[in-house]
Length: 418
Image (cartoon, rainbow, N blue to C red):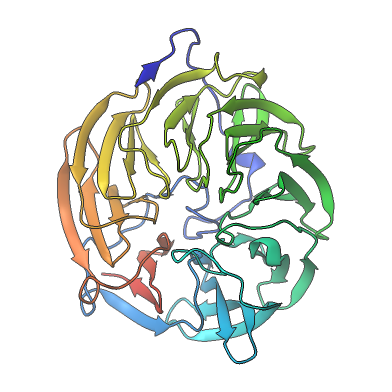
């Protein structure tokens, strides 16, 4: 670990008025309404199985690793249905009734031809949608982005983002004011783009100026307010960038060498942005976001390589930062200093991001096992839950509806409730 005492820790205020308004029960984007993985008000179960605390379980057509999003009594999820004979893939959006899981509507948004290769852990429907009011924004990487009404009708479609994906697509979009922002990090072109949320037309497009040997990444932006500025924090291969979300102008940058295939979404608190640098040279950076220009040497408060995830995002709870690496080693760190309080090996490998719900932390692995832990500087396991025989593929991160967990497996969506 390395600690930089040259910069004081900045105090920043995350202004909720800058972000889409939601109700307490809505889960409107990847990692929830704030993007931080918190569902603190949910009285969700800590114990479940295939038969215990399962309100309903429904089969999902197709295949996808996007998380569900929720507004009121509606659950929305994307999926990809492959027609092997015709060699086409139907990229679809489904609306389910939250009470019983029944499908209210099922709409094809795009059809892709051919059978492009993706990573064995990826899908053609991995980015999570974004909800705002009666609008649902769905994203399928290079295959297109669209806005639907919550009744399933299509408002606009955009298939103008042409670049060469590596291992498929994965990063989710984010809304801020009148813009839909997402990262496009392929093998040939790398940029971040802002679309007009009303029309789908390009408002700005900012290239990544670094040239790492492996340029592809899959990250989701995080919107913060720090240093008196609204910022879109957008990690990619080789570095993390902060942009003015209205114009796409670069505010600051931290380079991290050859880190690539960046997946974890940044989190923000204590005036610090926490960023993982991906595969190759995985590190966790604690960055003061108040600087300008290249702040690699001046605004990194601390960094560490120990136990850093390549796929799951980290979770900030109070003064502690929690994370689990891809091989299943969970860690608790002091969020301000980076000092490690504990490390514990959990069951299996991990891709899904941990969440905080009802004051507890839920770590879900790739085979249907979830470990529930009490936050704190000492490791305290509350429960361990297994779906099926512990061989159910579970790569999607949890979502929440009312007092229930929405767990997406390879083939089904579960509503877990006391």
